[in-house]
Amino acid sequence: MTEEELLSLMALTKIPGLGSIGAKNLLTIVGDAVTIFHEREHLEGIAPGVTPRLIKALDTPEAFRRAEQELLFIRENHIDCLSISSDDYPSRLRECDDAPILLYYKGNTNLNAFKVINLIGTRNATAYGKELCLDFLKDLKRLCPDVLVVSGLAYGIDIHAHRAALANCMDTVGVLAHGLDRIYPAAHRSTAVEMLGHGGLLTEYMSGTNPDRQNFVCRNRIVAGMSDATIVVESAVKGGSLITADIAGSYHRDCFAFPGRINDEFSQGCNNLIRTNRASLIQSAEDFVKAMCWDTASGSQAVPVQRQLFPDLTEDEQLIVDVLQRTGDLQINSLIVEANIPVNKMSEILFELEMKGVIRTLAGGVYQLLA
Image (cartoon, rainbow, N blue to C red; front, side, top):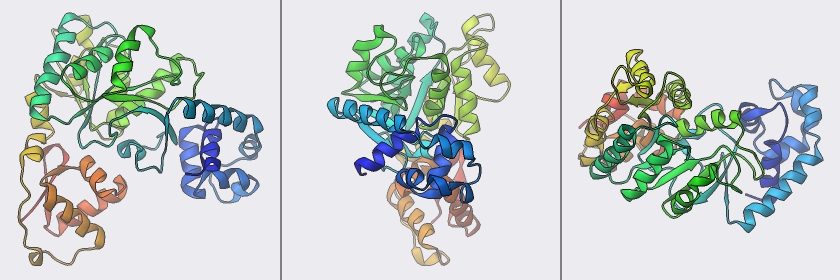
């Protein structure tokens, strides 16, 4: 990516009234951020929803001045900028309508790991919740060694999820509600520094951004969108983790919750998620792995397949067959990552392959190649 394109992407995130959805749609239609600014006077005729007010807002030297400041900051601090078209950008998140067009990342892990979960919950974690984080990730490490653990670095379950991941030698990523020039809360700085060598820190916000309340709600979509599954450990009747769970549901991602005693304040949210069928009940890592069919996916061997038995396949269909032959059973999100095919297109291809009798669907959104 050229410096001009990067500066244009940064500037685009500072345009008032545009938002993530508007910016993503503009990029999809126009193709690149440089052209959006250079051809702003002509956007109204080619991009739905573009108004004279937006065209005027795009004529903003201040946004570019801010972008130039940020470029200096990220270079001085060795921060990676991940554009939505970058191979390193979380591919699961890219398919969400409101995905950020640019992410700032400092760390060393693969954000497109084959298995990604987020572990979240109340800021008022009980001893039960803290122990549950540690035990769950200890067992999950044994069952699926390469799972990436995502959370929000906040008080309570979030920070204990990160610490439990580190204690079990699992990579963990904290999604921040502010820029990478600070750590909030400051009490979690030492954990955040440790995470840089065993995961990383990720945000959509430029340096100098305050951790305002609305930013925490916005960052929840990144936590949910970049993960295969959301797991709620503890939650009161209201809380940010319930928002994340609902967002995960809107993205058609799996959501799980640990049940608690009916009179415990910080189990009410989990119990309600389960009662209203917005989350599946789990009591252990074994329950979770089985529900996700990761026991099958991780332990299966590639099945020899006689290609001549299959009907004629398109190039994309053959790509999916080749992937499943090489890896064995895979969940749809892992297929998207492995084949680098957008989720909307992937769904169509998988449907056609099922109709042709080439694959079948297992529980948990896992696909199996038929011999």
